[in-house]
Each structure stands twice: as structure tokens, then as C-alpha cells.
Amino acid sequence: MSAKVNCMEYDKALFDQLRKLVKRAEKLDAAVVLTQDNIEVYHCKEDGEVVVEGIYTYSFDSWHAINTFLDSIANQLKKKWAPQFAKLSASTADGDVWGLDLTGSDCVVLEIGNKHCVSRYELP
Image (cartoon, rainbow, N blue to C red; front, side, top):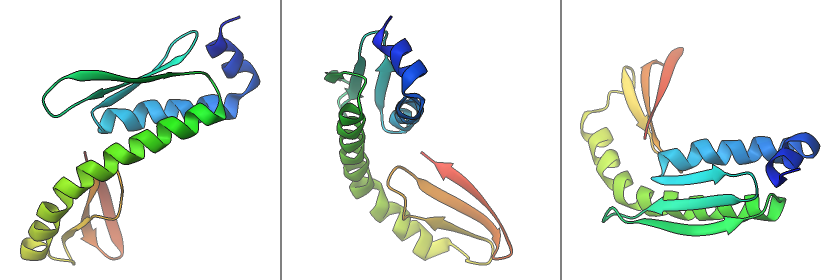
């Protein structure tokens, strides 16, 4: 039995968390690939070069390491985009109609509506 199938059958909670990392990585110019025997992590650098960041086993320690790696990418990206979005929000946002939520680590959230009925849209 492959490590992936074993994880799916015997540690469903871990497998669900790993699948969330796959989706999270997509927002961060990275890829988490759940192969039959291991987990491969790739990252696209600013110059377009794709780098293998690591190959991991199906374990909680691997989930933690990958999540920490994605946090570091998110923090680097946020340092770049947060000042521009904060400037935009301060100059044009109308809190009763729309605004930008800059508190997330992976993306900006556009909020449209008044305080009683707000729609939220992630801006990757």
C-alpha cells in the first residue's frame, strides 16, 4: 500500500490538512504535490525559476514544516503588497461601501457592502 493511500485510510485528519496545504500553496506561487510515496514541495521564485523546496513523508511533522515554509512565503509577499494596498485603502476606500482587510497572511480581502451585509472576496 502506498504512503498516500495509507494516510488517506488511517489518518484522514492529516490527509485533509495536507489537501488544504495544496490549495494554500496555489495562492503563494508554490505547489504541494501529494505523490504516492511522498509529498513534494515546489516554489516559483520571482525570476521564474522553479525550485524543489523539499520532499517529505506523510506525517504531522511534514505538515508542520510545509505550513511553516508557506508562512514564510506569505510573510515575504505581504511585506511587498501590504503597503500598496494600505495606501490604496486609505486614499479611496469608503467604509460604508467597500474596504480592504489586510489582516490575512495569504491574501487581501475586498469587503463590499455596509456593516450589516458585507460580501468578502479574496484577492490573491
